[in-house]
Amino acid sequence: MARTNKKRARPKTRVLYVTSEAFPLIKTGGLADVSHALPNALAQLRIDVRLLLPAYRVVLQQFDSLRILGWLDLGAMGQVRILEGDHPDYRMPVWLVDQSTLFDREGNPYTDSNGRDWPDNPLRFAAFCRAASLLGVDALGLNWRPHVVHAHDWQAGLTHAFLEQEIDPPRRVYTIHNLAYDCQFDYAQFQALQLPPHWWSMERAEFYGRFSMMKAGLMFSDAITTVSPTYAREICTPEYGYGYASILEHRRERLQGILNGIDTAVWDPAGDEHLVAHYSRGKGVAKAKQSNRAEMLRLMGYEVDEAVLSRPLIGFVGRLVFQKGVDLLVEAMPRLMQNTDACFALVGTGEPGLEQRLRELASAHHGRVFIHLGYSERLSHLLEAGVDIFAMPSRYEPCGLNQMYSLRYGTPPVVRNTGGLADTVIDANPATLESGTANGFVFENSTPEALAMALRRALQAWAEPGLWQQLMENGMGVDFAWNRSAREYVQCYRAAPEY
Ligand code: ADP
Ligand code: GLC
Image (cartoon, rainbow, N blue to C red; front, top):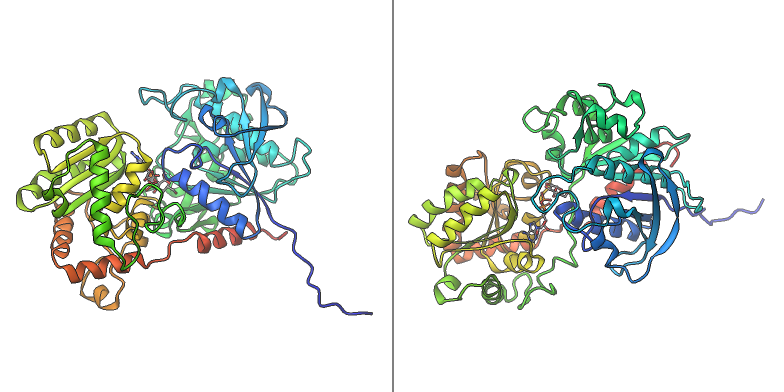
């Protein structure tokens, strides 16, 4: 018999990636950044991906043309249309679940203009998940049946519950980006959606007398991942587990932490389209920072004077919520401004009380506190590049992307020792400076005092140019590209016996 050296090519693994946001189509936070970079990194590893999103109005507006793949009947939840489009930012077809009464509306995908959850969120996302599960078994007969359905956060949590009802379902992978956010509803709503009665039980998705979409994701998955190894450990403890600790501890053998990467094409100080001056490790950092700072302040509506260009500027970008510890920063700022030269620049939107405190600080400390209370992709890039120190005092942080952006932009971060912050930032101390790994400042307690002390340490280091240079260069040299993490997801996809 003739022998052949030809290896049989393994058929491409097909993955249906189910998410409620994806940059630049729709973004409220880091999930969108991940859902842009990870599918693209997977496609580069020869994974055959389809990205599935709700057809929000703003998403529909970003496609030149869309093809109709078919209609799905969702029973009590009505009918949806599945659309397919190509987008220059994606290496794979994007699929949209289209139902105008559910998704074709203005504003935030989860909340109305007053920041309240859309009252029909249970229906909106149950319908999205039912459609995802049907696509997961190729109910439209497209001749594309995924080996894996990868669902993200509560918005996609019911997908795997629906899939369990199918014969020979694909492997179900569920990623937790933030355990604290959920959609929970009562028994009347559960009945109205006509969900299978046995799901309303402690072993399934009933959660303290309500139905939890997050719990459905946790209970019906073959594998659970979350976005950093430290957060994977933390959520098995009552302090960080949001009531799910014992469930997760029980399913620990299925739970794995895979650290997020960053999109090094979008977040690159050498080519970032939002910057006015580019730079790279060891090349032109100080001068470029000044130009970017001036542009940032100008865009925020401030006069730019010499003082603010030469003083140390501490920055923050993010959602103004309890998670991010913005209240700690607000408390620490006045004291720091009394004792040091520090100035502050903050870009964010969120809780009205925190926004108000920031307005007050900005008017009381004219020329020292600069704020933009809104969402601005451009300002977030300019800030990473234009400030000296990045503050991220999160109470918990599943992964956090901003600290990785700031490391890459030569802006050493000051972070609390939690979640992905603990996995990416290495505190500057004699040992880590000696080994060349120090890249920022880490503190333990969620108090304004602990934060202020860490910021003071950063300010002292900033005043020593040689030391600061070393810290910046260490951070800029860390490789956070998605490649490594994407390989870990591929391993997780293939962990099932049939691959
Ligand atoms: P989270 O997902 O918890 O909000 P991450 O650090 O993972 O935190 O990601 C937040 C993302 O959202 C980053 O890309 C950050 O730059 C962006 N972001 C948050 N708030 C704003 C804002 N007000 N303007 C622009 N970008 C923002
Ligand atoms: C969540 C988390 C954040 C993480 C992001 C992407 O929004 O709060 O820490 O970086 O998801 O995984």
